[in-house]
Image (cartoon, rainbow, N blue to C red):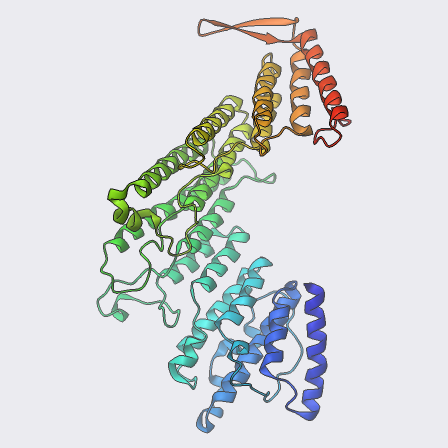
Length: 514
């Protein structure tokens, strides 16, 4: 894409030189194509797209200005000045032409909301939220400007929609800036649907301000706080950082609770607006992001406790949603409550998936809590079995323990060490292999699975005698340790080798780690 963008700019530059000499060479189609191509390139190319886009908009406004307006053209909007580009990348050096050829029937290649949003999205993908927000403010300024000819139709073509706002929020999310993501979300919530500018109660003639945000924008802001909460290898375990991490996770949940409050309020409002009733209804993405925020925050075990509680809440909502959708008596109620997919809700509604459980499971494993990690695995297996018994449907049909699920639990036991880690790892591997042999293609042990069990046996081999009886709650548990554990490791390695020799297409091949 960068090469294509570079070629497009080279061709446009050549045409620009001809245009300066002969006039009327450049067209609106040429401007739109080079802007679109550059918007998909690197940050330097996106910045050039921004500068050319501002030229393009200026030319459009000048083309449609009447004689009395033309003298005031430089004052149309300050944001059209290329210096308003907030990106750190250098801007293009091509001087804007006085005019270009316009094909009035080719409105698709006009400088409009879609084209501006394309450049804005490029900034977001390159993690440059300031550049993205500067274009959002440009659209708002153009929509508000009283200097544009063509009246409301011209101003409407620049009005930012929910995609533009949500993309800027996502840009801040990508750089883990929860404060600015929330600030833009507030702008979106209070926006005018005709200009994108913030409204107050005096501008809505007594009616409440309609929440202009949607579930995608809320989810992006929640994701920003989740990234703020996440512990990184560079995180310092000071009291300040722990408090900040916890606060970020709680901010993520606060936005989730706000969505429920806004949804309840909007559901009771008279239907005078086309805004869908489910526009801010949370979904599985909302909940999974909040779960991730708590599961990965620095304040543990508080974070894991809240992550598990939010997961249980999600499971309950999934069951409620499914039961209501299956009840013919409550079809109308369920449609108003859950089934409507307005506002780009995830098509799965509240149905949790494997990723949600893996997040919690991974957090338990990272904290060294192998027992809790295994408990999550067993819960996933139980939900999956129930789904299969019910014909493959139900609220938990997307919950399916996969290779990563098993490997994380195996690794948790291996890292824990101790007398029973080899025995526990073997039990989990046996269950894993049984699921695979039963035709469950999504769950198949790989070389990491077997190497992890071998590592667990090696740790058990370093403990005491050949067997060990452990008494817990009145029951004796036999653990294989010492020389017997070493033999178990050799037997497993031999089995992997034999399996590899029998099945030349086998996924598992022992390596130097084995």
